[in-house]
View 1 (tube, protein in one colour):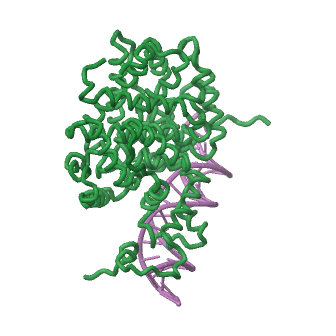
View 2: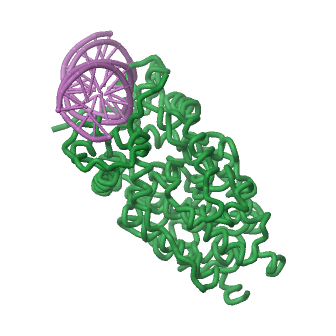
Length: 247
Length: 247
DNA sequence: ACCTGAACACCGTTCAAGT
DNA sequence: ACCTGAACACCGTTCAAGT
């Protein structure tokens, strides 16, 4: 029972690129990303993309299989330039640059951060080149082969984890009253029961996780991120076999 | 123009607890959590909660203002036991226990992980007691007041970040074919172009971020998490003013 | 106070044609 | 190959009553 080829498969099979087609995957991704940037993830819909492009919703399905695949493509589209070439820096400096570069790129489209950190629909988040580079750098740094997978996971978790939290989305729709509610909630913490919290609240309010009412788009946590990167790199140094046991 | 009090406010104002009400916030949260555990976040709907309880959707709105608030309450409900009492351990051991304890609790309801890590609707994620404790521990460890906010952020990012990535949700619906597709994608990486990747692929496949086709529910990353915790704690040690400059 | 019942505006996805 | 056009099953939320 030979089925008729449809959708992407058909397009991939025939290398001819019809010039009369109104749409393209790139155009769809660019439009979707623009909408996500403007309205946020919760307000995003496939129908809205179609509306923006002046086509019927069904037309989009010719290029992506479903909503999730569209989002996946959007992430890949937004992160296509996350790459750091080899260099002759120390492994510490190379990793430091990777972390900061990744954060800078994601901050161009902060609303996609949850898609990268909290869902697995972003294999394109890092191209194989970057994975290869990370493994090479860690190996040359001195981590033995049997630890490489774990240390690689530590690096990725560090790279993506902080930024995901920093750019976490606020509960949708009525963000203004939500922020106001949070602010008063934090302002009414019982400083007698929690003296440390009370004493440091001026420094923590809206600048510390769980005690914020805006996210990293409005109030970036630059100094905390810097410290986080320091902790990761100094920690990795300490776990190198050459430094084991040293204090 | 005096408005009639409705919903939670009214209930909170009148301390009387009607015994004839069919529902309660706790019952709704428990039901919602059960559904999320079973079907996942993407399949979750408020109407489904109402169906499970045998009531009309509107009934739920008497206890929560909207879908987001329901999810927020569910997170608080699931994490109500994340708390570590003071103890006479070292600050290193206390933090280590906090990290592992948090991961253990979230793993009881892995599908809520994205709600904690990637959205801000979880102020109940950590009760003030725990925040107070973290600040106290860090201060007693020797971090000066002007660094406390940043170091606190480092701790929270570490605590939540790894687990969020580890338990990231797979693209919904057809998870089986998605997993199969990912597996073949990873299996067909060009090992000649990426020799390091090729050499370590057996150790990395389905056990390393971006190179997985299942999440932490099926394949926990225990050893990577252990290493991550080591890195964080050793890194924090190094950043203590007393150890500054030592290598 | 708490719930029924019905409705509204929206969504993702699919079926059936068109050209 | 690529899109129109209409439909289906579902959703979150709200209006208007009931008791």
